[in-house]
Structures are given as C-alpha cells and as structure tokens.
Amino acid sequence: MSLLKRSAAVAGTVAALTLALAVPASAHVTVNPNTAVQGGYAKVTFRVPNESDTDSTTKVEVNLPADTPFASVSLKPVAGWTAAPVKSKLAKPIEAHGTQLTEAVTKITWTAAGDAAIKPGQFQEFDVSLGPLPEVPQVVFKALQTYSDGTVVRWIDEPATDGTEPEKPAPVLKLTPAAAVADAPAAATSSGGPSVTASGAAEPDGNGTWAGLVGIGLGLAALVLGLLAYRRSGQPTAAR
Image (cartoon, rainbow, N blue to C red; front, side, top):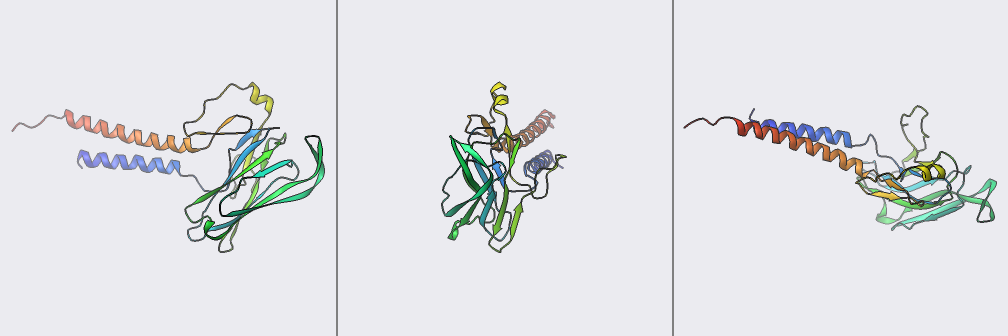
C-alpha cells in the first residue's frame, strides 16, 4: 500500500473514532442549562429532538413538580405552537412576594399547528422562566412526547442511584445552594458558548464538548499525515 493510501486509511479511522465518541447514546428531551441556583430565578430551555424516521412530533407535555412548586412560571412563544399551562391546587400554600399562593402551574403542554411539527432529523426548543427555585438538590421534569402516528414516548424515568442512565430519562435540573455559589471561585467558561442563568452564573451548553471531540480527531489526522509526509520526503531519490 502506498504512503498516500496508508495516510488516507489512517485519517479515515481517526475520523470514524471521533464521530463514534461524539454521537450521544440516545437523543432525549433535556433541560438546558442543567444546573441553576436555589432561591433564584432561571430561564430554562426544554430541547426536544425527533427520534422517528417517518413521523413528526406534534405535542410536548412537561410536568412541573407539585411538591416543590414554582410561584412564577412564564412562557416564551414558539412560532406555530400553542402553549397551555395548567394550574393545580397545592397541598400546602406557598408564599411569594408577601402573598400566599394556593395554586401553581404543574403542567405545560405545547401543541403544533400545521407545518410547525418537529420533523424527522429536527429538534425544537421551548423556553420557560421559573422561580423562585426550591431549596432541593434537583428538580425532575417528567415529559411526554407525542408523534403524528399517535405514539407517546414517556420521558419519566428518574435518575438512578447508581449513576447509570435510565432507558427513558426525564429532564433533570440540578440545583446548587446559593452560599456554595458565592464561595466558589469563578470558573472558566467553555469555548462552545455559555448559557447564563438568572443568577448570572455561566453554564456550558454542551456544544463545547462536540467541538472539542471533533477538534481532537482532526488534529490527530493532521499529525499522522504530517509524519507520513515527513518520512516520504526523507527517503533517498533514486539516481537517474
């Protein structure tokens, strides 16, 4: 095999390994950023990818916890989608800005109209402003995704205690105590572009991980090609 062919083969192998590392195990409904500060307000985005090869996502339902309710829930309009928040009576009233609240939003349903449905190979994002965030380690948002053929995918599995990812994981928002955030040193943001929580803390959006993996793969491929070219240039040329 010639040096050129060997170089191409090595570069192809490196690229394949890079893509294998970069592709996630499964595309599921997530909340971004996935961390925020207890007691504050945050703008979160529910990212919904379409996993079907043939059908579109026509409805998305996100359930908010009733045991740790949010006093304030605001929705950002999404073109072609109607949002329907549902309030429920609370077992225990909560206080917000000096007012006792006996009900809170516990479910939000987005429904697509016409051609706005999430088609195969696409995703959609739904922004929600929440607060104050409860003083708990995490908030689990159980979500249901409905397809045009009537199939409903239930993203409702809570995080496993052993750290393994469940089959149908629910979106999880990790919450950090405000005191811990105030005492922690400033952290460098990722090159992929941070998201900013209501508290002002920068959170990576996950794009930096993809860019880093692809960059490593391309760098390795360039290194291999350079070494092979150097070896080829160093070989003696036959006299004519």
